[in-house]
Length: 419
Image (cartoon, rainbow, N blue to C red; front, side, top):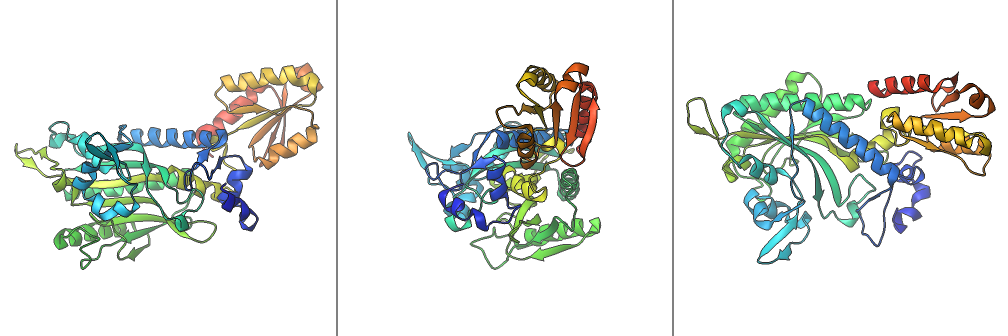
């Protein structure tokens, strides 16, 4: 935490991610590095890595093609997209390199449009789902910064779906919401309770904030409203909350402070295909203009971690926990056996650590519980002599003494089920 956040730590709720993030040694901030620029510690970096792998694997299984594009681009790219005049106040200042101005990227869509434009495309290739875990940079005001919920450097699970027409776009919007609900369910988040839909609309009279095309706005908003209505759930509508290039469906959540934030989003874009001259060859052999759907399946990694820390009060499920199991030798004479157990756990792909040292076993157990580690193993004389371990759980208490292979099987099943 920064010095200011450290000063306010005692006033934070017990499950505030800013308090738990420090207590669980997940992340920190440095005044010297800069406000809004989190430093991820080993456990926090592990948590990020688990989420990132989960997102990529899930999206690929849903038909997305993952790419990697640069964190920096020429300013001309954002002028072409139209982002620069609309968002320049929240962008970092241009960097002069040789004869060109470059910017740390605040969004990914222009990069993905250039990926699409590398070659001609047929209608048979559409919808084309281009995805990336992209590092983005935005200059948020100091008064808006709040732990990981709002930062100046973040990683977005971003994607852009190139669709043949409005009907295909409507299908892809529904499919994107299906993916969002699937991912949310893995985290035990319930629609209507933990998150809800907001239809974010434009303002036809605000030509400075929104791209001018009244007909396209009417069609886009009607499409999104129809998609949400057909799903049968409740949603709210909010004027003046759309992107400059089109209306969107925002997935809203509240943090422990009661502040509402957008966690995920699905956007309808009728502007960028023209700006980037996106085309495809239709069945009649003629060039047609596609429609673009912007979507994020999990939002910003930083923000979703903040929500998950608070949702689970730091007690992550086994599959998500940075340390899944701790090995505790009763005394020094049991350390060699504990190291053997630890090595076997690592070889089985479990995130395991050893808690040894001069402290008593009772104190080390208390520390493990304070760190909210899902499972821990006790190894003493009996375990060494019978080649077993004693398994205890954060949530269930003492489970019993058993061979290590039984423990590995039990944990592997729980991890696979993501319960």
